Image (spheres, rainbow, N blue to C red):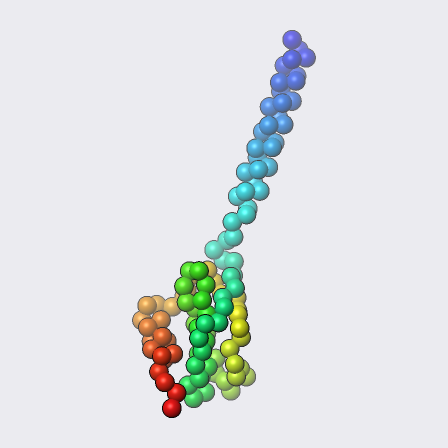
Length: 105
């Protein structure tokens, strides 16, 4: 009887250890909201000294504006690391999208 109880206790410990290990490994597979994601360039425009770059991720559009002189940037990088969520207000997004749609003369 003592031997059966000892075997049962060992089995319970083993199952508990496996369950906790799986729980921890599955739980850590999800990225934090603070983790950056890669966004791909979808549109760009030059406006005087400004370089406006539009990037796309699954969560939405992200924009980066460079001052060509101060930032020493003359072309948009093909991709960049961005936050999961866009950080612009709807009004700012609309303004930048309008700037991107204007024709260069």
